[in-house]
Length: 390
Image 1 (cartoon, rainbow, N blue to C red):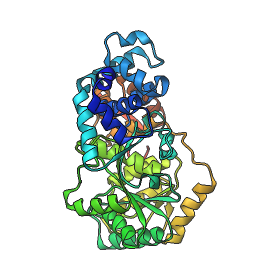
Image 2: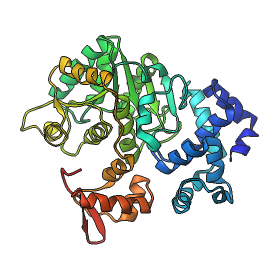
Image 3: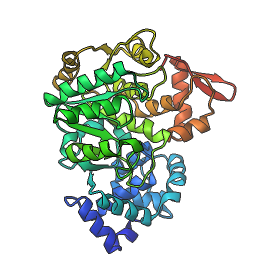
Image 4: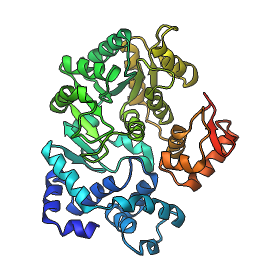
């Protein structure tokens, strides 16, 4: 695949435009990986770390590649190649680069001056590259705070999200969120309203405004801040990509604050990633009768989140992070498996592997450990998470 791309003059020109400071073969190989593998694919990440993106791409897409004998176990690699090869399309790489050029998006690659080192804490599940519209330098600027919460937020939540984001952005903080309705939108707008900086992490391509009602907001963020994604231009957001995107929000923030969230809100997923990465986590309390605050109360009780009610208390979260080195000791495979589990329905290991993007062998091994820890239980032919245990 890489040879076909390197023989295409248009592909090479597009790669130079998207990322002028890196070798063309690496840019094309990383974009190809971006097309082949879903976000957070640990097998792809490990293979690229071991062989480099160009040689790893040859292993993944060429016949006889298993003879290379990388450190990745052959069975795991074979399973991964079955996922990747149906997507091995040079045209898809060209389309992604052309779409990026159409919206003036640039590529940010690992090891480059604009690459946010914070996402490296995700290990093999770190992004292959990032697509950025706007100021890519904001991804590494200090301090960065993730403000997230319910899409169906209340007036109380919108008010506090706007107050916190506005105050923090006015004093130089970079407000990171997911571009969604509700709390995300309130935080982005407040940061822009005070002339501050904000970053929107999308689950689809940066050329596709989602949700549609935020087209003008995302356009303004791209002009004054940054709109970022780890998936190629043209990619549609899906449930899995939203969950995977959440790990980037958590990794990029020096601290994560959940303003309002339901009991099973996606913001709980973001908070779980933040806690697993060792990032400080804050939750805003609400009325005990409010369903939109139930998730925040759960975080305070079960995730050891800090109760935050003022911008000063939020600053305390990130100030501790900027002094203390950030940890990254949690197993990303475990995080992905726990995300894929249901506490209501037993799910077979094969289906958990499909949902999480892990191999069946890895899933079965992790399930055994999680069962010993009391995090999951076997039920019939499947596995079910134990509420509050993960």
